[in-house]
Length: 118
Image (cartoon, rainbow, N blue to C red; front, side, top):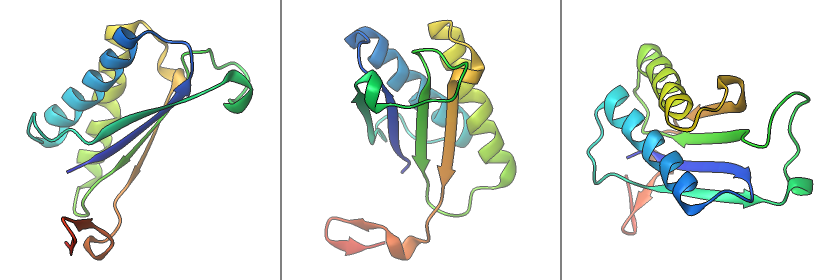
């Protein structure tokens, strides 16, 4: 049950944003075998003046934060980063350096669903 937060600059079409969501989700399905229904994703958009990015990044720069249940191997995490990046580059023709992915895997005691601690 990955939780995905995509931070990006405002100004992109609904189709572009849906493509971003689909690329991230299909990358997670391929990399770690989540189910298609397992979509807990959101896009947060920022005005350009509120989304500071390093020199040399384009308006397509995005920060993708993916929170996972603990237990994924280093190889699985590497595959997430590689596959999601590849899908975004292929679908949107953006440069890989405009994609920043942060993975975190807090302990199960920090997860709560339907009022219960996992």
